[in-house]
Image (cartoon, rainbow, N blue to C red; front, top):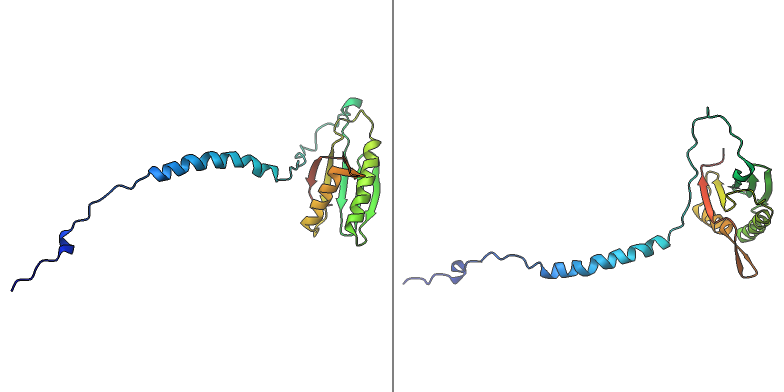
Length: 172
């Protein structure tokens, strides 16, 4: 008696090419969608300006004309205090962080608002401020100070203080 041959061995699998049409349709939709949402990601970031790299120390000191003076204002963030300093006048104010950081930041805003009102008109960069944090300062404290130096809320009316914030290396 002869056995019937198996049909599984006789069926040959034909090679087929993958159908790329659905994948291409998906790419046609996804690429413009991703490109259009790329701008919204940028809006969530805080823009900071890093200070310029210092040139050689052998450059001759050139005194700027009165219309070219830069207004250099710095806030030093330390463990227990915030120090507001100007290159021209030295230390302007010390604000102590005695527990309530929000109260100290409000005091910083009021002081910066007073400084902003007293800036003479012949300075050319009255919208920039430099922040310097000592080692060990938490990132959230730096972000809170950045938010405080940008805008002052005077009875629910936002007043622009120093929107161009520069971060500098730690305190020497």
